[in-house]
Length: 548
Image (cartoon, rainbow, N blue to C red; front, side, top):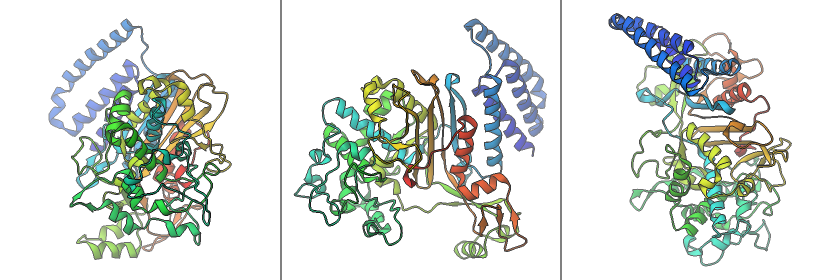
């Protein structure tokens, strides 16, 4: 309990500092931490008075500097209360081992008002996750790919309205004729344009997510686990990254029919962005990773953002998440789960059966095909910190010149040419690598919101930005909430989401509290992200575009 109190007091102080609280609040938070530390480590108590005196001097100096600079100490009470509410909510989940992830909140003219990390980077070693660790942002990569293509458009190297085959070399795909996608039983070549690839209007079949109903004719073209394992496995004797052309050819996409005429419908398809990355490589003369580093990461100041399709086989990257996400196992567990653990390990499983209902009793790895991230390429192979993601969106929106783009081009990027909403009747559309809420009253951008939830290796990364007025000119005119979440829950017994009651093979059925019920019924990421969005940006929460 004493150790937990010390951790809590540390977080109070971190929150105070990041929120630029008043000198009195800073002094109180630090004094509380010193008091807790003194209790935890009795030997340090003799230094407490000395620390307290030093603290008074430091606080006085900080306050004097603020007065000289003409600044004001502290945030408005309304904002501070939201910070407290956020910290209480997240810490409450983390204390129960229900949360693993990194969270950030940017609130208009007050800049970043909350930023923290929870859970483990390496559960096996109990290595804590920190704010500086880069995490997989999955399909948030798609926005980078779209920007890269528009950079080439600005340089006159391509036209986004051209068919993609204009920039494809057949030899790169081990083919002798042009790609000629056709409708099922069709005869005409219907090649999507680059722009159609970027707004999910390619007409191509979703061969990897494969979200089709049983019996659908498209299912015969879905990628199998054997195909994917072969693609990302050993190649030429070493573990190597699969470039965009190799992916497209190896998956047999050259011969897969279209399910719709390009430009007429919405369908979430990763392959379109992998083709986009191929075009960037072909026209720039650079591999996609070096292109991103030179033309996007560097100019935007993204110091903790990386692109890697070998999952560190090409060299470990400092402060980057070293493995896949994980699951928190919630009690009560089923007999089947108990047997599974007992039959596959040397663990004493008695703790699984005896734990109180509603507790996290274990942490397990999410199964994933080795080096699953390899195939992500321009669709999902970027790692970043939440802080870098905020910087990235703000740079693109308000400093496009740093990326050699014009404001008019940024507005094009945020314009959806897809006739269908994603999902239907939601008010949201898939623009180019990003989901937007169109609104012509915001003349500069034509939208009121930007949203994306990436997902790869069971790690989800939702980010939502809202403009605070109709004439935004800087980050101070935006509110942004985002995070990357590493863990999901595993409840192995039947659960009724309406009543929040779980079956219990070892006793009476148990009713979960509101937070646990929300996590089990909606998933950790959806539940936590929705709560944070509602604290900071009241309104409907967009849905994951991949599931729309």
